[in-house]
Length: 542
Image (tube, rainbow, N blue to C red; front, side, top):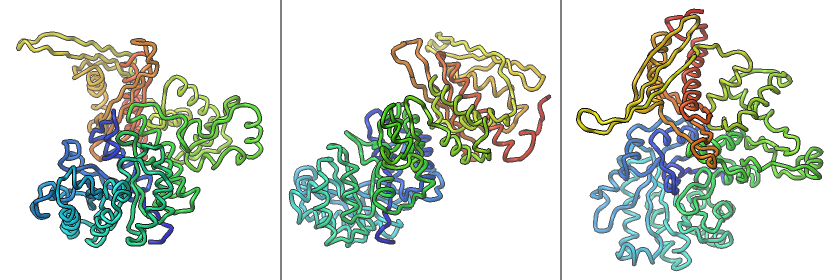
């Protein structure tokens, strides 16, 4: 490890899940973990084993990572129990994660009032728990809860707790500003003192944003010596949130000269990753978010535009493309072309950057995004759109019409039930097919009807399933006439995942658009993988 290396520990899946209005499903957690791994973070905190069914389901089948290491979160042993005989600690240590992060009290006020135990017993709880876990886990991370409040109240005791964790063998001791009330100058002063007793190479920082200083506090702690930073994507977290890794990471790398496990190419994924998470949470991205917001590099007409066109450094603190963003000239929009080319490279499209088809695609994307489409969280739909404009996606099928009927009635058992029935007419080549299917809701029925036609022709679709389905109202002022955006996440038995989008004033129509893209994308990907003109054993007519 070099002194210039900072390790990134992401808490989105656990601490971020405490955000009001955020409720991750197991599928959400899997998808976000894979995105974080692709970004290049060092640690992903998967959750708290035993705390809830979602976390239990997630840890029961952790996705395979290429870059990051999973960490499980939990507590030190309870007072009055041995480390070997504490159910909560045992669940944590027995989890499938390679590492564990255990939280313990370091503020004497909490020990006295919340735990109501002897202070020496609290220190013993920290030491015993870490020693117990060392033989089973690769690394032990100790989160020193309320450390800064504790240090300001009783520095000697807070340091006694921290030193006990270090001496017991914790790889990282993370200093937590749990209340988010500490200011940057205090962080600098306190971390500097801590580094005199515990090497900065074993220290981390975890800041909440209750004073709006979480990012500043994190960067100040790194300057003062810590070499692990904890935070969440888009600053998710309870109350005002955690330090926003989307801002912390580029500040460390582009402004302060530190290295992380994230490459330059990974850094270019930040904007897409940030917006993708917002789409998953069914909320609009923050236009003014630092680095990645749509307005982060926006310039209105006048002197600013003139100056930027001569030399972007006059009003831009970095090159937007470094974080996957782009310049946005409000009076004459020149955004998009470089992003389109970058996305082309990502999906393996080799095209001359002077090709006029790119200009057409840029305009199509702008038109669709104005209507409500969002491609940051729907890469599969974007790839299909791009390849269709280039004329490389066959028309595998055409749904010439569909009809969906919902029936709400009392059944023979006198239970109130709602049934959906879909009728589809689908043309494959020159053959016209018709099918009817029932389902648990109109989208499920529509999906079932389409599959009944397509699977005999394209057997590869048999293992496709919808992993997630989200609807967002884009024009809430229009009431029931509002434009809706549907996002569908699909997967298959191999674990591949892809996202598609549909937009319409009719939610069923929007759902069909996203569903059609999902089916088409699977067919195209299979064709590409096999490098064959056909994606199935049975070739459709024409």
